[in-house]
Image (cartoon, rainbow, N blue to C red):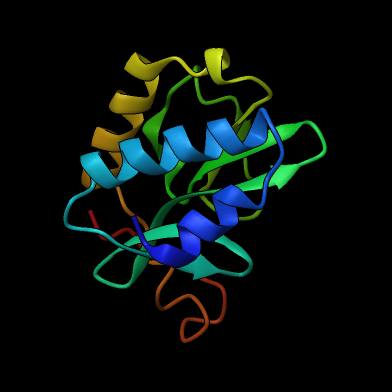
Length: 130
């Protein structure tokens, strides 16, 4: 686990700390080809410089976000972005995480990707990579 992500997780209170730790470990294990870092103040994993998945703290809990998640067409990933192709889910307790859904979303994130890396260059227009 990236040391900055470990520090981010440790800075949280329970149960958010446990949720963050579980998510980071599973993402690291599932996306071995990804690079991770703190980006815009929260943990994010990238493939070829493109953001794939990350999480952040909200008042309601820990929000797990997939940058291309709206294209997964998954009803179990309920919160769709309005402007971009992201989708997310918020966890308030560790036991809220449905690992079968999580694993499926991770697999989808490897297959379906929008080019966020070049969004500024394209003046806000997203193009599909995969």
